[in-house]
Length: 253
View 1 (spheres, one colour):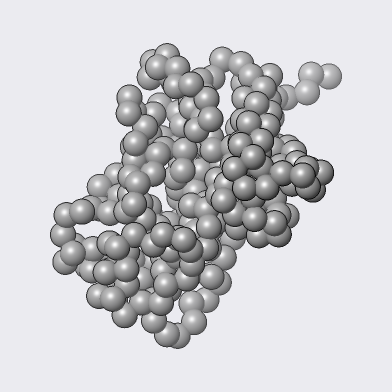
View 2 (cartoon, rainbow, N blue to C red; view 1 turned 30 degrees about the vertical axis):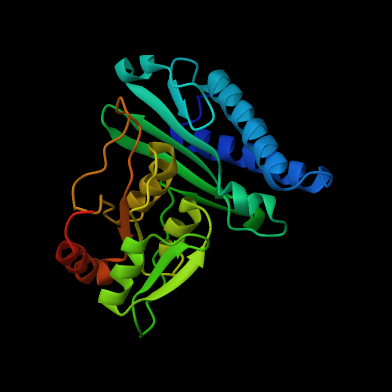
């Protein structure tokens, strides 16, 4: 009997899980490394593993990875995997922090059609195809996820306008998933990102019924010639309107 090929969601999840296990092993075994050396090793090992696994399982697809050379042949491809092998390298290098992630997303014919954000140190995998209900939102001010080391001035100003509480954490993927798990109400980023930073988190958020956009409200577009995609809004439905109005009041970045 012929075994049917795994669907793209299963491929994304399996690849992210294997990369996560490899990163945990590096972190545990290479106690002689820290800081930049551990970051670089984690990036390299995860990138090489992910690209090898995708080449084996989806050999006809293109890949755009933060750690790889950008092959512009992807612009003519119907299917492109957009990956960040290690999102939150600083947090990864600071044992025992757990707020770092592995991003694996698939873009096909203009849309994100599969996506996984793996949080290996938390033993969690968030998938586009397995949505879970958002936890009830507690009473109180809007909670905004923000970089723990360098919150953009724009987001600080937004928080002041909303009377919001800033919740610091690492990794774009962790921040976006914090909206889904109820830790925060919204993640607004305006400090610069690339497609690999947001593709998988956006795919998972879409799968959970959210409507991520750019800060100006326009659509997020992927597999473009220049992968720079500097801003992002992911918010719970209950707060999206008030966040959107505050952003519109703040005007252009």
